[in-house]
Image (tube, rainbow, N blue to C red; front, side, top):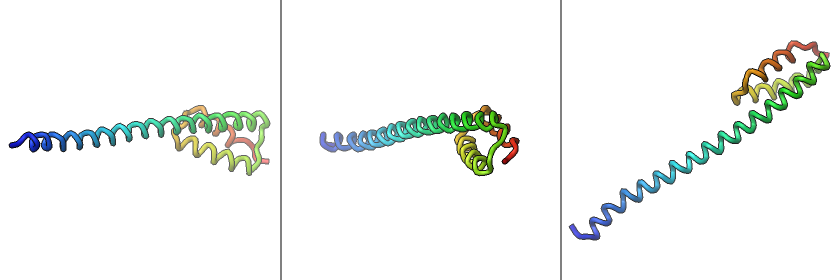
Length: 99
């Protein structure tokens, strides 16, 4: 076996490993980026569910259109994995009289 054949034999596996490492690191970076965006959206939705819910609870009533809007916010928040605080406020708002 010549030196060229030996180097060629070693080069192909190295190239394959390099490509696989690049793909793995890229996917890892994108997954981390996705998690950060998801956590940010959960934080924003939690803020909206909490602040709007507290306003409705203080008023003691809610309109039908406000309730539909609030349900959309809560559904998105809950689907992304929101915690129990938002659910507790949502349940309190849901039991308010609709004017």
